Length: 57
Image 1 (cartoon, rainbow, N blue to C red):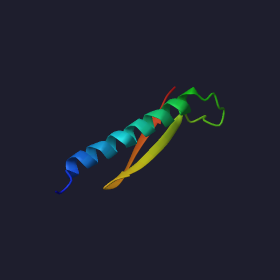
Image 2 (image 1 turned 135 degrees about the vertical axis):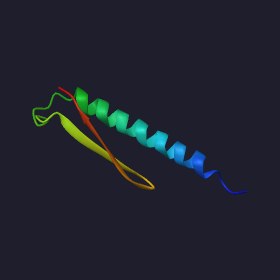
Image 3 (image 1 turned 60 degrees about the vertical axis):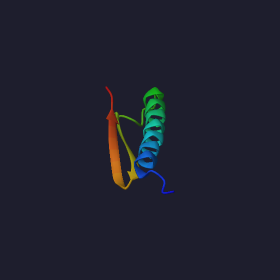
Image 4 (image 1 turned 90 degrees about the horizontal axis):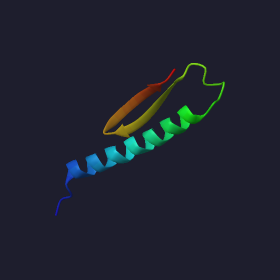
């Protein structure tokens, strides 16, 4: 039986998004003066490389 590729991709995408959400939340909670630009990029690979930039003011 061939595994369902779409199911695998959706599962992998969900894991990546949960990981990015955790890291983004931690980043926003950090009152670090190094984060003056208030922007950070999170990247992951799902068939190709994707990057999400989060920012806050």
